[in-house]
Image (cartoon, rainbow, N blue to C red; front, side, top):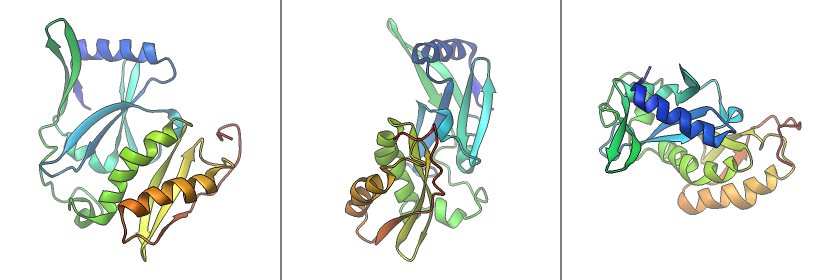
Length: 199
């Protein structure tokens, strides 16, 4: 569990009440284990949750963290920072920049800042998924094989009639422009159209 001060919990609940659509928060970190590590707290939606997440339950809200990065949040704290008449959440994660060992199934992949898999995942998290989140969906990176990125659509993107167009004319173009060594993006989603689908 992340240590969240009583004052911070009250503040978070007030933010969530204003949001109304979700009582879910996500903690994430870019470039964990490096001096570039940056922690983030953001809203999320139920449809985006996967078995890769660990849930931390608090009074009135839940916080989700990808299990593979949870060790970087060891001894983390969330408190309120007061600045004159303003206040904001402050997340302190003392191990965010630490080069932890033995915490991943493939630690040689995830602990190298310049590793292609990690850089692609980071690009998806910060440049692709924010757009898809507006339609209640997201993609997850499954693997990179023989130069091709394997992804899966979740939430509103699963079963969406525009998913193929979104993949080829949106997601793939953006990824190829950022990573010239990538040959293409393959969708491994078992699409099931339903009320969850955006279109």
